[in-house]
Amino acid sequence: MAEKTIVITRFDPDKDQAPRKQEFKVPCEPDWKVLDAVNFIKDELDGSVSHRWSCRMAVCGSCGMMVNGEPKLTCKTSINDYGDRIDIEPLANFPVVRDLVVELDGFMHKFESVKPWIVRAKEKAADQAALHPSKGTYSQSAEELATFKQFSMCINCMLCYAACPVVANEPEFLGPAAIALGHRYNMDSRDEGNAERNAIFRGEGTVFSCSYANECSEVCPKNVDPAAAVNQAKFEAVIDWAKNLVLPRGGA
Amino acid sequence: MSRPAHPHAMAPHKPGRTRTAPPQMPSTWWSAPRIRNYLLFDATGIVYYLISFLAIGMIQALGRGPEAWNAVMARMQHPAYIAFHVLCFVSVVFVAIRFFSLFPKAQPKAIGPLKPPPGNVIHAALYVVWFAITAGMTALLAGWIF
Image (cartoon, rainbow over all chains, first blue to last red; front, side, top):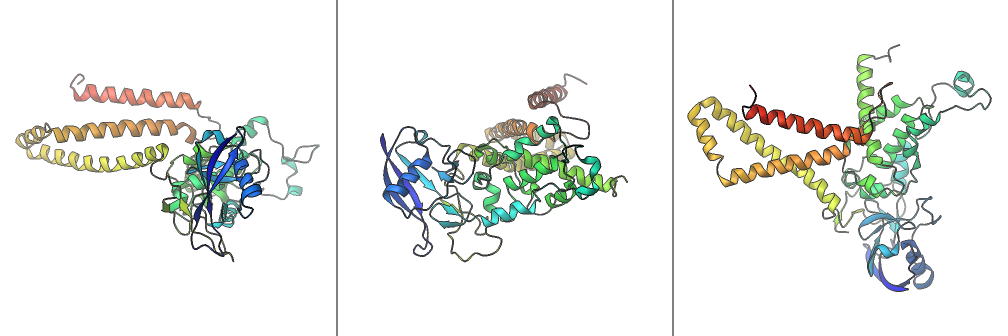
């Protein structure tokens, strides 16, 4: 067991004009994750510390925080990766609701705007030819799945937004996770919504705002590689635009 | 945190009832090695901007005749110009290496029935083309060919 100084950024909207720092001395077990230290503070030292967490196994994406200035999923980050003093802050680039809790509404709105669902041109009943004969579902081969599976592993932890220099400076930017999700559906063989999403991607503050800093992919805890998705989406949006220019009615 | 982000970064779609603290950029926004590389990558644009003036000046000197051209060539021997050209060379190499490392994964998974080769093949091909063009240009400018 080693005692570490955990510095937590505190902000109470009812009392504080601006976020402030508070130090806690925490006796850390060697196998702890950073989240265990924050939970210890909450349980044993100061019950008013507010933070989000749930699954403790890097699946729910709730416990993203800045650890020594870098966005980290705290349930996946070993406390031993750091020295005796660890600075824990709320995710960068987000408004802070309280202590380590950030405002999610803007993120959810950006997410929704890329139509993250399968779009079919016809209603299911009128789309019998595309359905699996016995299961009544849209079939997909393993090869087709492999083209987008990587981009579907996102857990919405928002670390990519905290790392992205464009998100910090361009409020209308859709951001890495939302674009990666939109691209994931564009790549899905069952989907027919490419034209709608590519029209969104060609708008202001979308794929072409990305300057390919690649920070989103560096911090992603699930190796989704959003930077690859964003830059592939750029290419697809241009190809789609060129096709519409040459074949305005899709070649029909 | 050392620098405020845009005050409306990741703002809620509709204003909430709770007062929030404004968004901040990471404290390492300029000093972390990866971010520093990214900033240097962007900063090389200044070097290319400056050398474009130099190139325009050289073309103009070429148009004014042999004396003007020789004067420019003599000026290029100055250590400041040599240092600037070394900086340009380092910038080009740095940008090429970073660009080549990021280029393969930005390729579409398929264009119609055509699929791109594996990433490491694209990566190697970029270097082969780069060295081939450099060798060709060197041979041309040195008078080894033509």
